[in-house]
Amino acid sequence: MSESSASLRKPSVHPHFEGLTRDWVEGKLPLDYREWSRVQSEKNCSEVWLTLHGYQQTGAYLFEKLKPAVDEDQILISPNAPFPVPMKEPTGKYRLGFSWYFYNPDSDAYFIDMEIAIHSMVELLKKKGLESTPKRLIGFSQGGYLAPFLAERLKNVIQVVGIGAEVLGQELNSQEGGWHPAYRVDGVQGAEDPIVTLERSRKSFEQAQWEKGKKRFEGEYCVIPQMGHGLKEAGMHELRRLLRLGKGR
Image (cartoon, rainbow, N blue to C red; front, side):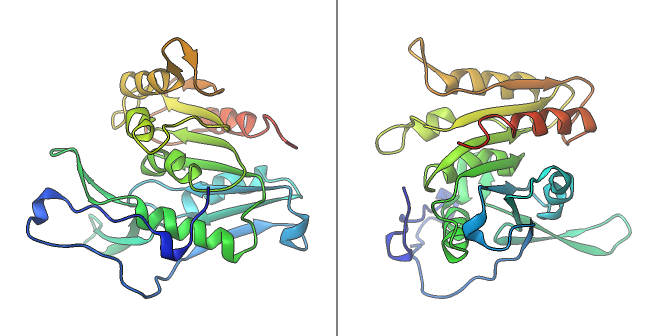
């Protein structure tokens, strides 16, 4: 499934903004990204690895970790999320992180939902001529939550890997037509993660994978001992192994 700028879904408005109407306006948003490949042209690319970083991070986080694992016929694209989040460091200086969306766990609602982030990724791949190229989506934390929603709006997704994230199966299944992914869904989870706990993450994966005793999708859930909310070498080892599954499809 793909989209055009004319077919954007109506953006949701958080209940906090009662009395406001939200709509789309014409305009352009800057989109910064890192890219790594050895292919001479996108036409010679066998796969796209699209990374989705965590909240307040940049694309560099996953880019630097995955760059050594990319084969000669693959392209690694690591965008910054569309919404800047200035952060004050303990030193008093500011650094710039980014967010894909803004969610309020207290009210279980979005201040700004995933729509703009999804649209920006769809348009980026379209602009680069990679709409139909096989894709693997690798999301960490907030990016891991986003990844399966984005996958539903892209063509030829062969795998989604969520790291330190939950699979929001109920929300995905509430979309029109339900959620029946033709792609793999894999999880990598730190056993000592204090932000997205192992219990929450594993439960969400299992509930999403099984529907009335039937398997909804193929995929593995990998628990990494002594890993918190991040990617240690053991987690990277599992991630690299998962990204080799089904290569060449």
